[in-house]
Image (cartoon, rainbow, N blue to C red; front, side, top):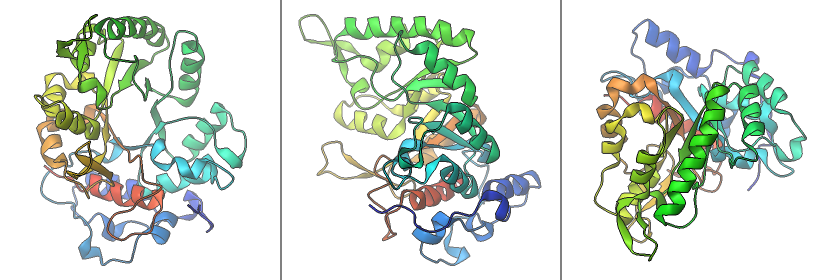
Length: 347
């Protein structure tokens, strides 16, 4: 897939960003069409077809379900922009994301491919230059690297530090208990550094654990972690798409019930959409936000009382290789359209 070859104007050369405009309008209680007043970005100019303002989502019908200053993006979504010889680098990527309107980023690594070497301190400066906040990161954490990872997290100004993959392998109850205990121990170090650990889960954590004989127990991996994690030290990032896949594969639960049980144990959630597809073993295809069938308006409406207590992170694993609605394939175009749909959610 080709990378951006057009120029990327800096944020300072652009009109007021969509995020700043939305925040200003929200403060003055003026209801406006989201896209009608948004400054065009390089990404939208390349990836989005021309549409009339009336065709864009409108900011009406109640309070925002995701506050503008809580709309973030997991950088795994746009990893193609930071890899290989065609990398546009963190500087240009952050300019694009800020102009789209994103307030927060969640990291998926700290390298930028062909754009050259870069340090965490240099990345932090680029975040600050573009009005972005780092809220978390998907790293592979273990007792041997936790100190170094916490140092990076502090340099970047993160409140949270997490892991994108499972914290244990297999399904044995004993393995997951041991892993949870290890994470609690690492969580003590994180707490001393002013950071809280979190685990990002996929479909596998909704499966049942097994006993020493290999037979299923009567509790899911997720329930084991809920019990074994010290909530003052380790928390969760629910990927709502993968929770729905888990419900499809291992039925008998509703993701919303976990979120409602104790919303403060979910300071981050992945807003990843999925389109129903019976031919897919997972039950859903990953798709850009707003083009799928996961009932986000319903889910987030039930959490509205706590809406300002979490970071909503848009993620789309395949944004660099697919686009909805006949749009050109461009991960930043998907990020632009998805931001509009998230900002337009009302309840």
